[in-house]
Length: 169
Image (cartoon, rainbow, N blue to C red; front, side, top):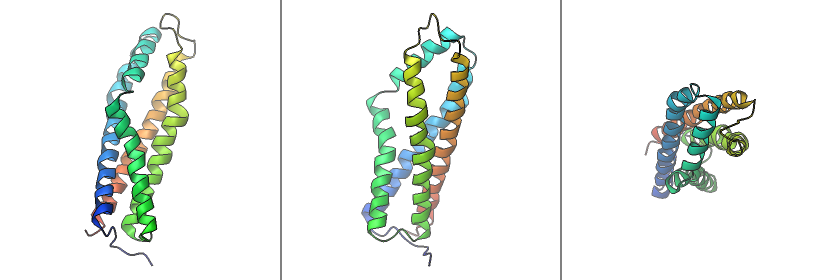
């Protein structure tokens, strides 16, 4: 039987709140990128696109982004382990949280690791003076998958908030 109340214990609540904050930061990051940077990138020539993407991909690899990006996986996974170990996984709030984690892992993290990073690595090899003929196809594919991970991050964040709101704590 599905219980409504869950997340007993301060450590679980704190981890869930941190998961939601990190998830919200990443949802906002991807959302802002989708509704601004992607639109600007569409206006660039092949060599401008190459130069800008190479700069973005270099600059995003910083400590702050790394902590938030990987923290958005590590903290919720740790939270999920704690919820399962405590036997709280059958409650509504835990199931909402676990659903949010799965959506994030598949729709955001996996998409980044399996699609965006390989494309970024490929773009890094392009010469701005002579980008490959298929650069526009890569640009479109990159943008399309960024929208996918944006939607997944937003849905995940909403599920985290719903989980916290339904916890009754």
